Length: 213
Image (tube, rainbow, N blue to C red; front, side, top):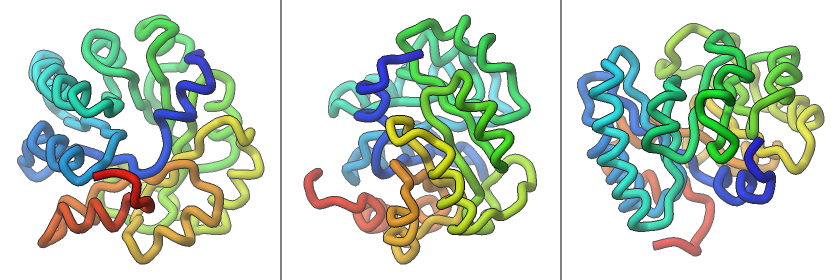
Protein backbone atom coordinates (compact mmCIF):
# COMPACT_ATOMS: atom_id res chain seq x y z
CA UNK A 1 0.00 0.00 0.00
CA UNK A 2 1.05 3.58 -0.56
CA UNK A 3 2.74 5.25 2.45
CA UNK A 4 -0.05 6.28 4.79
CA UNK A 5 1.29 9.77 5.40
CA UNK A 6 1.29 10.48 1.67
CA UNK A 7 -2.26 9.19 1.21
CA UNK A 8 -3.56 11.25 4.14
CA UNK A 9 -1.97 14.35 2.69
CA UNK A 10 -3.32 13.82 -0.81
CA UNK A 11 -6.81 12.44 -0.04
CA UNK A 12 -8.07 15.38 1.92
CA UNK A 13 -10.65 18.13 1.52
CA UNK A 14 -12.55 18.77 -1.68
CA UNK A 15 -12.36 15.88 -4.14
CA UNK A 16 -13.48 17.14 -7.52
CA UNK A 17 -14.87 14.67 -10.05
CA UNK A 18 -14.19 15.68 -13.65
CA UNK A 19 -17.00 13.62 -15.14
CA UNK A 20 -17.51 13.12 -18.88
CA UNK A 21 -21.25 12.52 -18.49
CA UNK A 22 -23.68 14.51 -20.66
CA UNK A 23 -20.90 14.97 -23.24
CA UNK A 24 -18.86 17.16 -20.90
CA UNK A 25 -15.12 17.52 -21.48
CA UNK A 26 -13.40 16.04 -18.38
CA UNK A 27 -10.12 17.83 -19.10
CA UNK A 28 -11.86 21.19 -19.24
CA UNK A 29 -13.78 20.36 -16.07
CA UNK A 30 -10.59 19.22 -14.38
CA UNK A 31 -8.91 22.49 -15.27
CA UNK A 32 -11.90 24.32 -13.78
CA UNK A 33 -11.56 22.40 -10.51
CA UNK A 34 -7.90 23.35 -10.38
CA UNK A 35 -8.65 26.99 -11.14
CA UNK A 36 -11.05 27.06 -8.20
CA UNK A 37 -8.36 25.80 -5.83
CA UNK A 38 -9.25 22.09 -5.66
CA UNK A 39 -6.12 19.97 -5.36
CA UNK A 40 -7.62 16.50 -5.60
CA UNK A 41 -9.27 15.59 -8.91
CA UNK A 42 -10.66 12.37 -10.36
CA UNK A 43 -11.13 11.93 -14.09
CA UNK A 44 -14.24 9.85 -14.78
CA UNK A 45 -15.14 8.90 -18.35
CA UNK A 46 -17.31 5.80 -18.32
CA UNK A 47 -17.77 4.28 -21.76
CA UNK A 48 -14.64 5.85 -23.23
CA UNK A 49 -12.00 3.73 -24.90
CA UNK A 50 -8.85 3.16 -22.92
CA UNK A 51 -6.86 5.14 -25.50
CA UNK A 52 -9.13 8.18 -25.23
CA UNK A 53 -9.05 8.03 -21.44
CA UNK A 54 -5.27 7.75 -21.43
CA UNK A 55 -4.89 10.80 -23.69
CA UNK A 56 -7.24 12.87 -21.51
CA UNK A 57 -5.51 11.71 -18.33
CA UNK A 58 -2.09 12.66 -19.65
CA UNK A 59 -3.39 16.12 -20.54
CA UNK A 60 -4.96 16.63 -17.13
CA UNK A 61 -1.89 15.23 -15.35
CA UNK A 62 0.25 18.03 -16.78
CA UNK A 63 -2.22 20.57 -15.43
CA UNK A 64 -2.33 18.88 -12.03
CA UNK A 65 1.44 18.69 -11.75
CA UNK A 66 1.72 22.41 -12.50
CA UNK A 67 -0.19 23.24 -9.30
CA UNK A 68 0.79 20.28 -7.11
CA UNK A 69 -2.59 18.55 -7.37
CA UNK A 70 -3.34 14.83 -7.14
CA UNK A 71 -4.99 13.06 -10.08
CA UNK A 72 -7.01 9.86 -9.69
CA UNK A 73 -8.47 7.80 -12.56
CA UNK A 74 -11.87 6.19 -12.21
CA UNK A 75 -12.06 2.43 -12.89
CA UNK A 76 -8.94 1.92 -15.03
CA UNK A 77 -5.77 0.83 -13.18
CA UNK A 78 -3.81 0.50 -16.43
CA UNK A 79 -4.33 4.17 -17.27
CA UNK A 80 -3.64 5.11 -13.65
CA UNK A 81 -0.32 3.27 -13.70
CA UNK A 82 0.64 5.07 -16.89
CA UNK A 83 -0.46 8.63 -16.24
CA UNK A 84 -1.98 9.38 -12.81
CA UNK A 85 -1.30 9.31 -9.08
CA UNK A 86 -3.88 6.65 -8.37
CA UNK A 87 -7.05 4.79 -9.27
CA UNK A 88 -10.55 4.62 -7.81
CA UNK A 89 -12.60 1.44 -8.25
CA UNK A 90 -16.10 0.34 -7.31
CA UNK A 91 -17.08 -2.57 -5.04
CA UNK A 92 -17.88 -4.82 -8.00
CA UNK A 93 -14.79 -3.98 -10.05
CA UNK A 94 -11.55 -5.98 -10.04
CA UNK A 95 -10.38 -7.30 -6.68
CA UNK A 96 -7.94 -5.04 -4.86
CA UNK A 97 -4.99 -7.46 -5.11
CA UNK A 98 -5.31 -7.37 -8.89
CA UNK A 99 -5.61 -3.59 -8.94
CA UNK A 100 -2.51 -3.26 -6.76
CA UNK A 101 -0.49 -5.56 -8.99
CA UNK A 102 -1.36 -3.39 -11.98
CA UNK A 103 -0.70 0.04 -10.46
CA UNK A 104 2.27 -0.95 -8.30
CA UNK A 105 3.17 0.13 -4.77
CA UNK A 106 3.43 3.87 -5.38
CA UNK A 107 -0.06 4.61 -6.72
CA UNK A 108 -3.03 5.36 -4.49
CA UNK A 109 -5.92 2.88 -4.60
CA UNK A 110 -9.40 3.95 -3.48
CA UNK A 111 -12.57 1.91 -3.27
CA UNK A 112 -16.23 2.97 -3.23
CA UNK A 113 -18.47 1.27 -0.67
CA UNK A 114 -22.16 1.29 0.20
CA UNK A 115 -22.39 -0.77 3.38
CA UNK A 116 -20.24 -1.82 6.35
CA UNK A 117 -19.33 -5.19 4.84
CA UNK A 118 -17.96 -3.47 1.74
CA UNK A 119 -16.05 -1.07 3.98
CA UNK A 120 -14.40 -3.94 5.84
CA UNK A 121 -13.46 -5.57 2.54
CA UNK A 122 -12.02 -2.32 1.19
CA UNK A 123 -9.85 -1.90 4.29
CA UNK A 124 -8.00 -5.08 3.35
CA UNK A 125 -6.29 -3.40 0.42
CA UNK A 126 -7.45 0.14 -0.34
CA UNK A 127 -5.52 3.23 0.67
CA UNK A 128 -8.74 5.17 1.18
CA UNK A 129 -12.43 4.31 1.46
CA UNK A 130 -15.26 6.24 -0.18
CA UNK A 131 -18.73 5.79 1.30
CA UNK A 132 -22.19 6.74 0.18
CA UNK A 133 -24.33 8.02 -1.24
CA UNK A 134 -24.89 10.14 1.84
CA UNK A 135 -27.73 11.86 -0.02
CA UNK A 136 -29.55 10.96 -3.21
CA UNK A 137 -27.66 11.80 -6.40
CA UNK A 138 -28.21 11.18 -10.12
CA UNK A 139 -24.49 10.91 -10.78
CA UNK A 140 -23.84 7.32 -9.70
CA UNK A 141 -23.26 4.68 -12.37
CA UNK A 142 -25.54 2.20 -10.57
CA UNK A 143 -28.40 2.79 -8.09
CA UNK A 144 -27.28 2.48 -4.47
CA UNK A 145 -29.01 2.72 -1.12
CA UNK A 146 -28.84 6.24 0.36
CA UNK A 147 -27.08 5.97 3.73
CA UNK A 148 -27.46 9.43 5.30
CA UNK A 149 -25.24 11.16 7.82
CA UNK A 150 -25.85 8.48 10.45
CA UNK A 151 -24.41 5.91 8.08
CA UNK A 152 -21.35 8.08 7.51
CA UNK A 153 -20.80 8.47 11.25
CA UNK A 154 -21.09 4.70 11.77
CA UNK A 155 -18.58 3.98 9.02
CA UNK A 156 -16.12 6.54 10.37
CA UNK A 157 -16.07 4.41 13.54
CA UNK A 158 -15.11 1.37 11.42
CA UNK A 159 -12.39 3.10 9.43
CA UNK A 160 -9.12 3.67 11.31
CA UNK A 161 -8.40 7.37 11.84
CA UNK A 162 -5.29 7.22 9.69
CA UNK A 163 -7.29 5.94 6.68
CA UNK A 164 -9.02 8.71 4.70
CA UNK A 165 -12.80 8.41 4.47
CA UNK A 166 -14.35 10.12 1.44
CA UNK A 167 -18.04 11.04 1.60
CA UNK A 168 -19.89 10.76 -1.71
CA UNK A 169 -23.36 11.63 -2.94
CA UNK A 170 -25.39 14.82 -2.96
CA UNK A 171 -22.87 17.04 -1.20
CA UNK A 172 -23.50 20.78 -1.48
CA UNK A 173 -21.99 23.81 0.24
CA UNK A 174 -24.92 23.87 2.68
CA UNK A 175 -24.38 20.22 3.61
CA UNK A 176 -20.59 20.42 3.88
CA UNK A 177 -20.37 21.35 7.60
CA UNK A 178 -22.42 18.29 8.55
CA UNK A 179 -20.28 16.04 6.34
CA UNK A 180 -17.11 17.28 8.01
CA UNK A 181 -18.61 16.94 11.47
CA UNK A 182 -19.52 13.33 10.66
CA UNK A 183 -15.82 12.61 10.20
CA UNK A 184 -15.20 12.72 6.46
CA UNK A 185 -11.58 13.33 5.50
CA UNK A 186 -12.62 14.38 2.00
CA UNK A 187 -15.84 14.94 0.07
CA UNK A 188 -16.37 14.00 -3.56
CA UNK A 189 -18.50 16.32 -5.68
CA UNK A 190 -19.91 16.22 -9.21
CA UNK A 191 -23.32 17.84 -9.56
CA UNK A 192 -22.92 20.79 -7.19
CA UNK A 193 -20.25 22.12 -9.56
CA UNK A 194 -21.11 20.58 -12.96
CA UNK A 195 -24.69 21.86 -12.69
CA UNK A 196 -23.88 25.22 -11.06
CA UNK A 197 -24.52 28.54 -12.80
CA UNK A 198 -21.18 29.74 -11.38
CA UNK A 199 -18.94 26.66 -11.09
CA UNK A 200 -15.92 28.54 -9.75
CA UNK A 201 -17.95 30.05 -6.93
CA UNK A 202 -19.34 26.60 -6.14
CA UNK A 203 -15.84 25.10 -6.01
CA UNK A 204 -14.64 27.80 -3.64
CA UNK A 205 -17.67 27.33 -1.42
CA UNK A 206 -17.04 23.58 -1.29
CA UNK A 207 -13.36 23.77 -0.44
CA UNK A 208 -14.03 24.23 3.25
CA UNK A 209 -10.84 26.22 3.71
CA UNK A 210 -9.42 29.65 2.96
CA UNK A 211 -5.81 28.67 2.46
CA UNK A 212 -5.84 28.09 -1.29
CA UNK A 213 -6.22 30.49 -4.21
